[in-house]
Image (cartoon, rainbow, N blue to C red):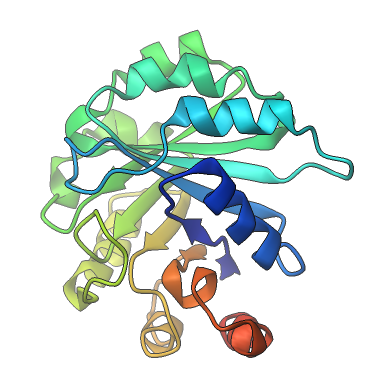
Length: 219
């Protein structure tokens, strides 16, 4: 299992302070974009993120950013993300209820990778077979989307096995309450996720404890 920190902030300066804090250990991050409508929480806008990156070009090998779009209008966000250098954009995650036609996504943005997000209440059996066979990535929310620090929903983990049994061959991500308490649950699964996306456990860690926390998740 690989680790990609999930970051939630209300402004670009605060977000990039978190990135700088974690950069000794990570080169890829998942950026949460929340509109205050699709979910109650509201973060920096994707325009602010992209503008900040373009105004502060990296002096070293650039980071890779996944985008977790918790928004009502994901299609309106994609042209903005596409303004970034292509090598800086990883997977763009879109939630099941607002997921656009996959063929439209891949036709309009043929060089980008898209992932589907399932909330705890979303059912694996409701995913169309064409998506199951086509998607390169799928993210399972083990909390209800919104503010960080919500309780872990263990029952979601059965969806990993359900996905594999339906023939899903892409990468599976876990987002929500990933920490040293829940980490043993992932390690004990018959079908393990490919990526874990810890949020506050790393981003809000005391500086003196960060190295230990990173080692714990990578052990």
